[in-house]
Image 1 (tube, rainbow, N blue to C red):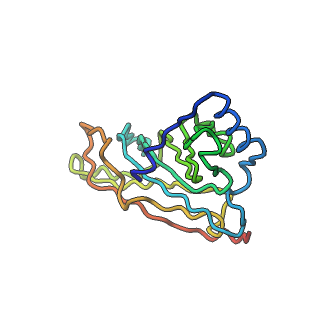
Image 2: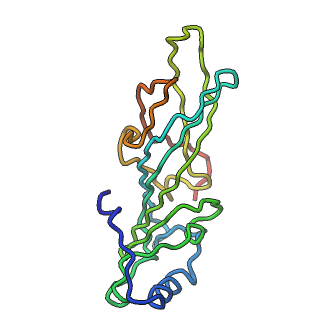
Image 3: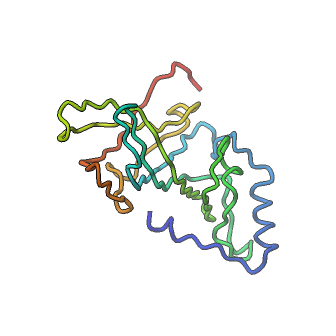
Length: 194
């Protein structure tokens, strides 16, 4: 992951960057998975950093959290030779140019090997059944599901960079104590074959 953060956008002129972006993205179709051989699985890796427990609403049985994410994958269609393009080693297109139906305006970076790094900041709200009978010593287990809609496991493989949420950015909540976090991958058979 350390190498993914060291992306540098460098070129001698605006025109070199503009020409590279045009050549890579002019025929790019975000509705098609980013592999030349469409029978290959695209692996998407996610590092999730828990920012905060924003709200816990016992009456409505909901919880909201702030997640900072690093999500990366390889895009075989977005590769180039830096020496052919003014030594540009990374570009920063709009996320809408690479993903379908996203309202995100968060940064996305692409390096010349095709590694795409996207860093969305997400506010999630989820129903969470809470038993308050042991108040103030009550404990609750809240599950958040993040999944890919419309893609099977033969098309996309989601994996987490680590077993637990990263807590380096976590802001302690004075009302609630976070006891543990855990990530896991679940697969569902939709009955639809690609």
